[in-house]
Length: 287
Image (cartoon, rainbow, N blue to C red; front, side, top):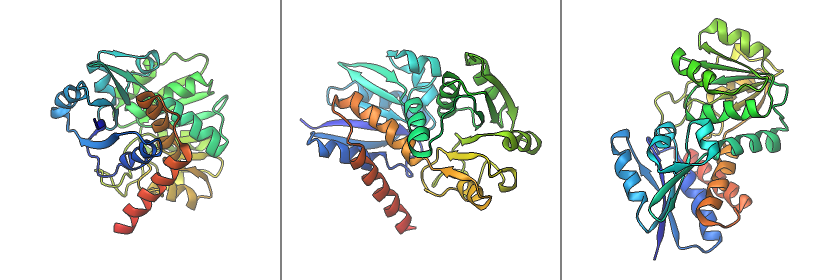
């Protein structure tokens, strides 16, 4: 019997997760198909019901459902509950368990691909959604010096700041006005885009959450958006002579954690990177 793993999100036209997850499944010779299930909010309940079927191993969860799904699964692991967001669902004989692998993927990408260790560093975090929650939680847990959460919705940013156990890290919320961004970007060791701005196929394609002149060469700029590989934010950072990291490594590493939860098999990281890079190149060639 062929079994399935779904990807729940909307839109999904930008996603390369089916490509690299299928490559990993095929590498192990597993009779499992990874499918993108475009799921607008009004259809999320139906998608979760489908996940309970015997032929479904579970699902990945992306924009805009990570926080909502936490409230809809039957149970969740402590990390997902602490973060307040789920990006991976496991079907356990009809019961759905939520996990969060974004935090692990984020830290592994920063450490292995950029040599960045958050301890004692100053972080400017752009966004306050599910991905931002995982990032903020990770930086506090890693004893960052400060985490500044910048978001257009002040209440959403303040709620995220309030949800964090600070452990000595200075955490505050600010609006994304130019004055606030200029001050905090100037002092940041790390600037993280945890919004969908710049994402191919999204509502803010071609836009950057931070103007180039606000970026200094002393920071590392990390964009969680992986499609396109060179986002407007990363282009702006490179123009200012700033080190950058794109979103593909985080995507692959969090996906590798999910793969192991779904299958019980070791994730073939090199296979997943190769397939992910090929998928991005194919998308770029079509445009």
